[in-house]
Image (cartoon, rainbow, N blue to C red):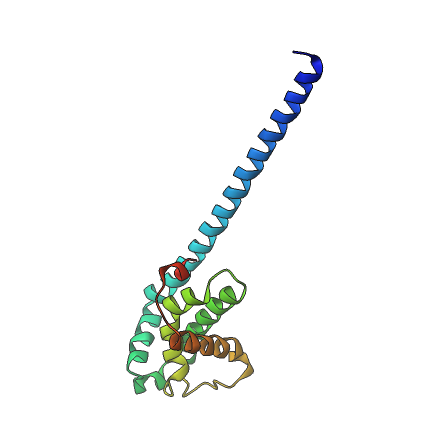
Length: 154
C-alpha cells in the first residue's frame, strides 16, 4: 500500500469516526433534553398532587364548593401560579398542549369557571392574563379532546 493510499484511508477513517461521534453526541443531547423535560413535568405534577393545600382546593373545585370563597388569597394565588408555570412551559414548546390539558387542564378549567374561587380575587386583572389564556386554551382542548397516545408524548 502506498503512502498516498494510507493517507486517504486515514482521512476516510477519521471522517467516519468524527461523524459517528457527532451522531452519538446529538442523540445523547436530545435524550438529555427529553429527560430534563420529563423531570420538570414530574415536579410540576407532584406539586399539584402532593401539596396538601392544592389537594384540598382541587377537592373543593370538584363541586365548586362555596368554601372556596373563604380560602386564603395566598393559597389560591399559588395554585393559579402553578397553572401559569405550566402555561409558560407549554407556550415555550417544552410541553405539548395535549399533555398540559391531560395532566393539568381539568383543574385549570374548574378554577377558571368557579365563581366561588374568584370571590376575593379579580379574574379580569392583567396579572392573571397568562392563566386566563391557558384556561381558555384548555377549554378548546377539552372541546376537541380525542385520545391518541402519540399526541401525549412530552
